[in-house]
Figure 1 (tube, rainbow, N blue to C red):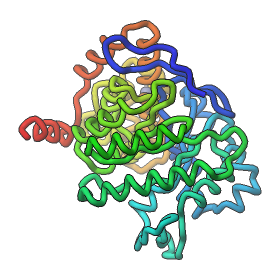
Figure 2 (cartoon, protein in one colour):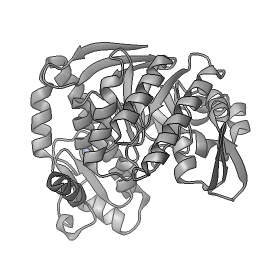
Figure 3 (cartoon, protein in one colour):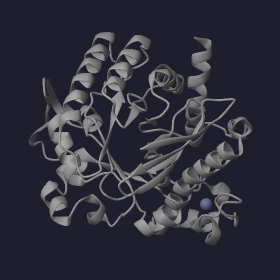
Figure 4 (cartoon, rainbow, N blue to C red):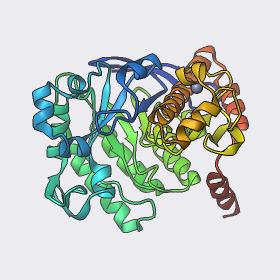
Length: 380
Ligand SMILES: [Zn+2]
């Protein structure tokens, strides 16, 4: 399923190719997030035009609305949303542990109440895999327990034990035709737990491995550490996926640490606040500074928004709440994430990733929040 084409000589970065039932995915890859069977504000034609190879769908949300009966009647998620390229679905574990109210963790899953209407629901390995089978995703994720990053050691250990047991149950469930299943490594920043979890999952021979328990509110240095602890225990001939990350600079940092796949809501989420990503960091298109700026969002960008519209115009749209404003920023931001991945793959193919990595990180200004997290980490 995964072909390792080349490994960088100066970092752990990898050029690869993932073959799925709906086509080939060149890695490293960014997967735009279509939580509710839609990548917010973007239609499938736009996604295709900007070079999207694979998108993410969400088990927890799609099971609540529109419900499995509708998706089954539509002929699966690909047909329902008119997307004929690969789809990865997450297991719902993250949402159950972060969104749902009143949880009771049982041996075979979690009792919880819907965050929408309070109705009583149950999701475990069996239910999650059944939903993902009906969705018909190309890659299904195992149902795991994702504790908060600051959970006490005892809770982290219990989460790893359940994650391993549930992964084994997931492995035995029926799948959609051609559907692959990835295991998820938990364990926080505890080296022994990460190692134990990774080794147990690798022994079960999943089709790929995700590093979970990242992007759950932890400071950036902890995110890097969690990946560094899990990665050495993962086999080279399978894909590695860091879930729910991150900024362009964090993705490049994690590619250098051996990660192949990413998904993140940031490009479309921050677009709705009028924040644009560039290769040098973020800036606000709402502020007065761009009021009369008739340049594109990012010089040199070949996205539809930058090719046709100015910062001044997009700022105006955002300030009068015209939907086109947030659509244009969403197009640019998503395109930027995909463009960075294109550049990374080209650099890996050319054997110049080490230089690309250094230049990219040197040119990227992180947010104040990330800078203060790094400073505190160094001081500690
Ligand atoms: Zn652009």
